[in-house]
Amino acid sequence: MTHLGLTNLNQLRDRYEGQAFFEKTMKNIGGLMALQKHLNIDIIDLNKADLTDFQPYIKLNGKKININVFNFGTLPMIKIKEIENPMFFIIQKDSLTFMLCGLASKDVIEKNLIESNTVKSSTDKFMDFTGFKFLESIKQ
Image 1 (cartoon, rainbow, N blue to C red):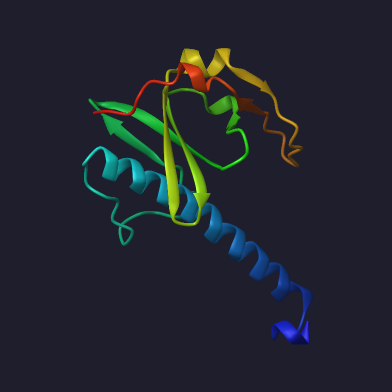
Image 2: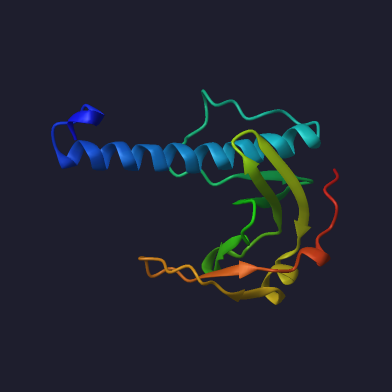
């Protein structure tokens, strides 16, 4: 603890939770910005964004499209209760590299889910998306 400059376990927990929040938020913002740049639309203003529970999405032609940013080498996990809109899938290769995969309709998402091996401590049900061959190209 002293090597980290901390005096108790609560400080260690706070530092860990803060780092996890930062990494998750930066992943989602980075994916959103990569898509916005690709589509030549205005980039999110971080000074005005509410980052409390940031869920990336864009609106195209009046329709909300969710964004799922996932780590390179993994499958994107989707919370079953939240499949309401089409979704863009974006891979985060490293902290600065985002690769746009494509767009899936709600129907394509629902038909290409498999059980996730990841155990979550919450009651939310997650599944992995595997339908990459059905993705549409990302264009405006």
